[in-house]
Image 1 (cartoon, helix red, strand yellow):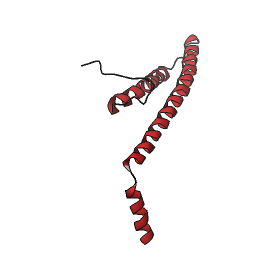
Image 2 (cartoon, helix red, strand yellow):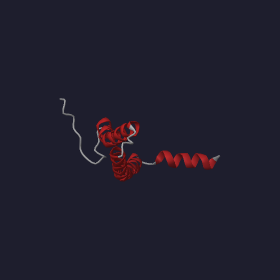
Image 3 (tube, helix red, strand yellow):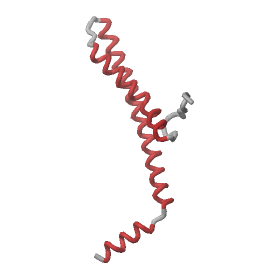
Image 4 (cartoon, helix red, strand yellow):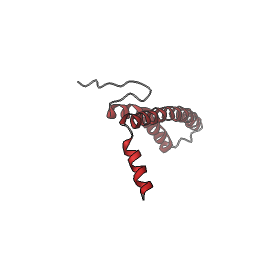
Length: 101
């Protein structure tokens, strides 16, 4: 039980700056992972667009696939901007500002 109290005292005695540095590091790494995953997803989406175009040439277009691909890529494209706007930070790939002032 004494070890638990000592561990608790050590955890509570840590500075706020240490936890802020850890959180900043996590946010930075998460933003990098999101940017990388977004790039890979856009490349795969590009192949999907080529597949849909080939289907259109041969008259085998499935409009549900076209709609799902378009909506999915649109959501992925604006996800970083929405997170940046809501949190008031610029962790994404660009700086987004409110133009409706």
